[in-house]
Amino acid sequence: MRKPLVAGNWKMNKTVTESVALIKELLDFIDGYQKTEVVICPPFTSLWVARELIQDTSIILGAQNIHYQNEGAYTGEISARMLQNIGCSYVIVGHSERRDYFKESSEVVARKAEQSLNFGIKPIICVGEKLVDRETGKTREVVKEELEAVFAILKAKEMANVVFAYEPIWAIGTGKSATPQDANEIIKYIRALIEDKYNETIAQKIRILYGGSVNQENISSLMAESDIDGALVGGVSLQAMPFSKLVKFQQL
Ligand code: PEP
Image 1 (cartoon, rainbow, N blue to C red):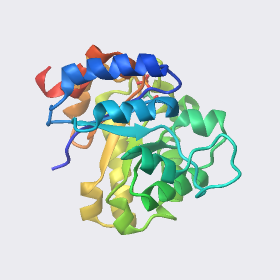
Image 2 (cartoon, rainbow, N blue to C red; image 1 turned 135 degrees about the vertical axis):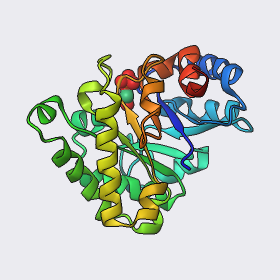
Image 3 (cartoon, protein in one colour; image 1 turned 60 degrees about the horizontal axis):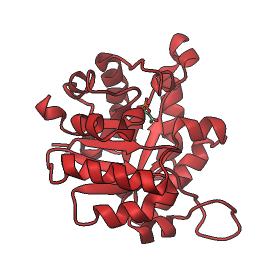
């Protein structure tokens, strides 16, 4: 049985002061809720204060990016050791905004995932197609290419600590979610590729999230699907009450 996971990606939002306010509200609503694993991914500047507020609570800390080198002359970058030291248990890698705006290749994304695992941080590896890919029937091809770069680097025992997020790019921040059936179909395909490359036990154990305009209205139908194990949430994660409702989707 895979425990549902809801991760909030705050992106480049929230000052330290605003982060404190949001986390305090979140704690009021969801601290101690055990049915869903909850991860928040604030910007780097708020990680420390977030860690101070959520240690000894049920909310888990994640980051939004990582560099694949250990340390050194990489101005502006953040290493796995730094994230480990600040208390991050998860890190998002390969978000489409990073692949697109910062030209991160699938190979770089895979190396980031590997580096995070080296430091005991679980990567949430994002994959997903652009609208043009979907319209030209290339969804599976795009997702497969992104996954194969990861498969080329990660060994079976590392895969146990990986989370994937299927995020069709046309659904991110647009208010236009994939249908639960379409999302489930691609997530099942991802699981089948994992099984082909590794084995059935690993494929059944790995959590695969859906991301793209998840909200209070669509979370229940998404979570009712066989293979959707949770959600990676952007916009809605910036407000405590609606995000908490997603976390407690079992009660909707
Ligand atoms: C995201 O950024 O990963 C995302 C899914 O955003 P939103 O929920 O706003 O579509």
